Length: 168
Image (cartoon, rainbow, N blue to C red):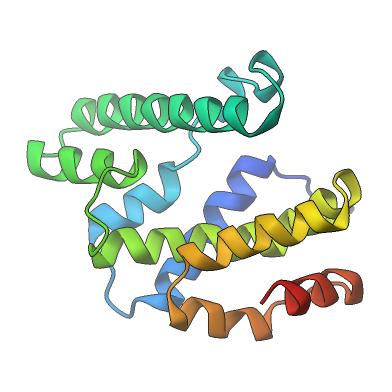
């Protein structure tokens, strides 16, 4: 029997959750829920419906955060989660938590590590090298020192590893 294909969003949610558990020995329920829901129904707002370039990308990303937060809050409320949990998960998913929030940093670290694992090679195929280096530097600035240390253990292609080393 062949391998079962799984939707990318589900694979990413599993990987983000695994990274959260690796980075935080005792993650809160809200953090775990946010890790699972961070890209819920992402396909409903396609990137190509926004202008190309950084400004279009940032607007698309902000709209996605709001969309994911709203959907997640509705689902959690319908399932009987308390207002405190619903609000906290929404804050994490929408990336509205304070800069010094440990759960928000753990989620950001997990998201960045999954980006490096799953999307870096495809990004490098689409963009010129200088642009990829710029993206990698912005990504690294969002990560904690602990998460940056984890990059060494990622299974990257030799070309992707060289880009990361150049950027960092």
